[in-house]
Amino acid sequence: MAQPRGAGLGGLARSSGGTGPILVVEDDSDTRRALGELLTVLFPGSRVLMAESGDAALELIRRTRPRVVILDLDLGGIHGFDFAAHVVAMSTSRPPAIVTLTGDASPDTVRRAEAAGFAAFPRKPADADTLETVLRPILEA
Image 1 (cartoon, rainbow, N blue to C red):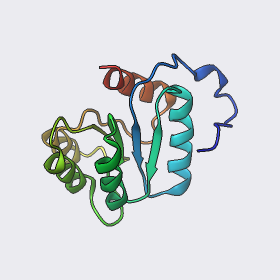
Image 2: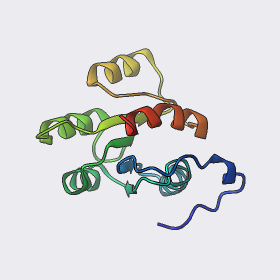
Image 3: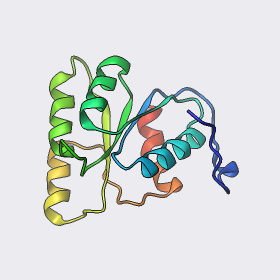
């Protein structure tokens, strides 16, 4: 993965202790790349993996066992709720925490996210402070 090069990101780096792999599942390439770069700065001790589809992400989960999955709820091909059910079904031990990012904060979607057991449900676009606040406790648990 390319080194982060976003302007203004230099002050965001925190502790470089290992916190486990982070998997970003996002079908928009620009969003996926920007989120990956931001996460690399926020969590320099973590390996940041990226997938553009639910199928690719499920294969990465099988191979790498990430600590947390950051999921675009409205993926092409498989919806985020169906993806989460697959992740839970394929896990032989504790499944990765799933943090979903979406612009849809309708009451029905929030209810379904809570029922699906998502660890957090920040709205897009999530800023660096929000991502760190949500992810650091999960990664360091």
